Image (cartoon, rainbow, N blue to C red; front, side, top):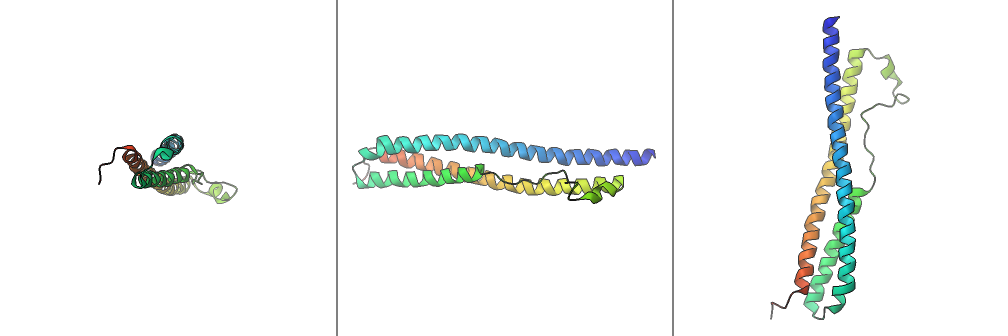
Amino acid sequence: MGNEMENNSKYLALLDTVINKNDAILSADNTLDGKSLSLLGFEVALGLGYISFVLPKLEDLIKYTEGIAGLIFLAISSLLLLIITWPKKYISVSPDISVHPEYLNKKEKALYFQLISDAQHAFNKNREKVKNKNKFFKDALILLFLSVFLFILSMSIKIYV
């Protein structure tokens, strides 16, 4: 009996570890959403400011084209940020007993194994979604920097003949 309780506490510790990993992933997802929304607000303000104050004053075709290219990159970046913040379905580590009533009939060891397996599956799927969102965020940042560079270039003096 003591050995069985010791094994069960090992399984419980493993289950807690997998659940904690999933909680960390979901927390990272929430942080990424917050950063994305903040950056999106900045991009909207930057784009509207550029369109309102700078773009109408550009008389040279090349400078105007640089500004339009910057706006296109900024729009793509904003679209990526919208995709990031769009609600997604995540897999819960807790099984729905109404869908899986067989969990109630499992022996304790088998139940731990099943719950650990379910939690690890949820973690893997949720981690993939957060990885994709993170990649989109990095791409949006690169596009933002590129658009700012083009905005600055469009407002600088002519350096070409």
